[in-house]
Amino acid sequence: MLGFFKYTDFFLENFNLFSKLLNLDFNIPLPHIILPLGISFFTFQQIAFLADIHAKIKLNDMQEGKKQGIDFLDYTLFISFFPQLIAGPIVHHKEMMPQFASTLSSKATFLDWEKFAKGLVIFIIGLFKKIIIADTFAKHANLGFDATLKGEVLNIAEAWASSFSYTFQIYFDFSGYCDMAIGLGLFFGIVLPINFYSPYKALNIKTFWQTWHITLGRFLKAYLYIPLGGNRLGKWLNLRNLFIVAFLSGIWHGAGWGFVIWGIMHGLAMVIHRAYSFYLEHLKSKGAKLEFLKSKIYIIFSWFLTFNFVSLAWIFFRAESLSSALSLLKSMFGLSFVELPQKWWRTRELFAKLDGNNEFLYYLIISFILCLAFKNSIQKIDNFKASFKMAIFIALLLFSALLSMMTSTYTEFIYFNF
Image 1 (cartoon, rainbow, N blue to C red):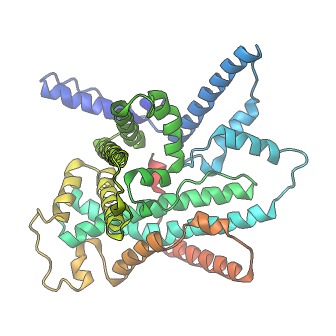
Image 2: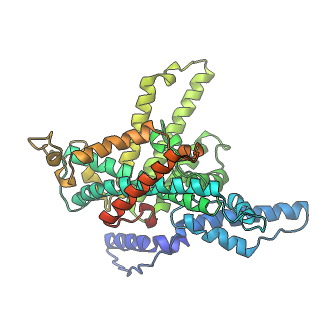
Image 3: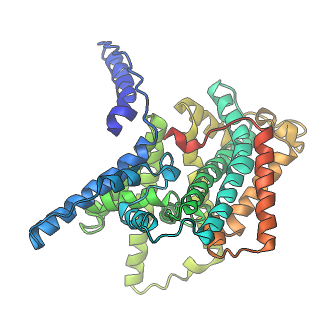
């Protein structure tokens, strides 16, 4: 289903291009198939459901000689539960079915006020992330990437600012949506799984994927990585499996060479990290103490390397063409030979193509601080206790978000595209 709806145009477009290189010139017209809403997410949920039920039926056949049925209405509710339907989290039937049964039972209360209060808090936090932070960065990121798409060349400051703008945009946009989805679920007494847990604090690429889009990683591990053999078949096949999973994760996100390159980059990063882990394990087996792993310099370097790799990979994820991505990378590393303005200390001139100013620079700095020095929204909600101060905090967040919505233009959630 995903192959037909998401990739038909991509395959035919590249087939036509390849045929021209061979002087065949098939020129098959592209059907431009409309993508069903949420297909990337409900397809994975149904794959997990069918695979687990099939395994369960086989087990029951062997042990009890009978099959256990699943109520079709429960199944349709699981697939179509709207808070998470169009952008995740990718829920699993084992965590959702019991909650539906409990919530819909005759003994269940109409409204769980504690969950409702928590849901309201995390929903407002998510709305604030999206409207105030993500949409602000979207403006500058779009200007930067659109400029490279038109063939314009950015200076080094504009290039790095464009990259970081998208890095923060996609995080606050997607995590904001997931917070809102979790909040909506709590309104109905349903607890959705955590999908983000401070991914930009990660010290290596493995930790990044354990804290970014957690439910996607969980699905790929259970239904791709482990069936491929996981880490049970030796080190070389373990490296192969890691690369395949990361590579297919990139392709899953969309039909385009940018997603392919993004998947390859993360696949190679996972392979290098695992090979490095094997090397450290080898040193430990030889009696090495490896005290340097605990040093502040090593920890800071690990974070710096991980964060910047993720940011650079996002460029291919976001850019609408490979030439646009390469142009931005050339500017970032000073290969485009674009001089900074004479009055480079004036942010309006330094970030001219991004329509940047002092406020934009402050947003970048504050976002780094929010991502690195503060607890995430899930940690906040775990310690939530209703109080007057919390009520005032919620009211201020809601007022700010609604005020911004009334004065800003519409921007969609990034993950609606996937």
